[in-house]
Each structure stands twice: as C-alpha cells, then as structure tokens.
Amino acid sequence: RRDCEAFLREGDRFVDCALAEREGNARFRVDGSNSALDERSGTETVRVSTLAREYALRPPRADALLKIDVQGADLRVVEGGAELVRRHVAVVIIEVSLIPLDPGAPGPLQALARMDELGFRLYDICIFWRRPVDHALWQADFCCVRKDSPYGAAGLGY
Image (cartoon, rainbow, N blue to C red):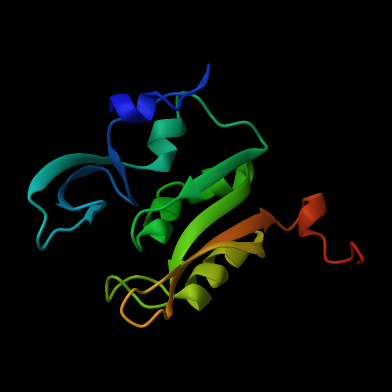
C-alpha cells in the first residue's frame, strides 16, 4: 500500500481492494510479480468491490482516464461500473490478451465489441508484450476513446 500511495497526487485516493464486476470477497493469487483474482489457486482472501461503488462517494471528472491492468479480467472491472464508464470516462486503457492467460478471458474482438457498446472506439495500441518462449504477441494495451469526443470523430482527416 505504501508503494502505491507514493504515486498519489492531491485529490487522489488509494482504495485497498480488488475490482471486479461484483462486491464481496475472493481468493487472490500472487505469483512473483504477477497477481490476479483466482478462485482456483488463490491463497489470500481479499475484499472485492466495483468501480461503481468506489466512485459513489466521489465521481470522476467528465474527462477521466481509466487504466485497467488486471490479468485478463479488465472487462470484469468495466462491468462493475459500466454506467460510470459510459457517462464519466473519456479514455479507457485496457490490457488485452491475444494469447489468453485464463480460458475465460475475453480476446481482442470481445473487448473491442464491449467497448463499442459503451460508446468507445479503439484509438491506439500503446504497449506490447511478447511471450518469452517464442516472442509471439501476447498482450497489448488498447487505448479506447469516447466516440463523441474530438479524438473519437471519424472525420478528422490526416
């Protein structure tokens, strides 16, 4: 927690929980520098909340940027605050696995389809990770912008 709080600016807040599409408790797995909610092999129990609940007391500004990196469960976090994302977020950056970490994780087409339903379009692919064993494209950060924003407009020209 202390490491995370070092990055906070005035007005920011740190919330000590995992985010998903539901509230409650869940098992959490830590594997080196990788961690995730994992009901099968998690050894820690953590509090789980939703974006909607955590922002109920302090809604984000209308131009908020939401960056999610939760090991293939990014859309679960989005679902926990879909209306908040639709109404208050200008840019969403989600990590998408091209080679699934989890069999239930959505692929790029499913992630982009859901973001489209929420009123966003793919703007950029920012960061790439390659699988060490064969250098195949493994994951990428998709930057999605609101379709009704200046950057979401289709007719900007060159």
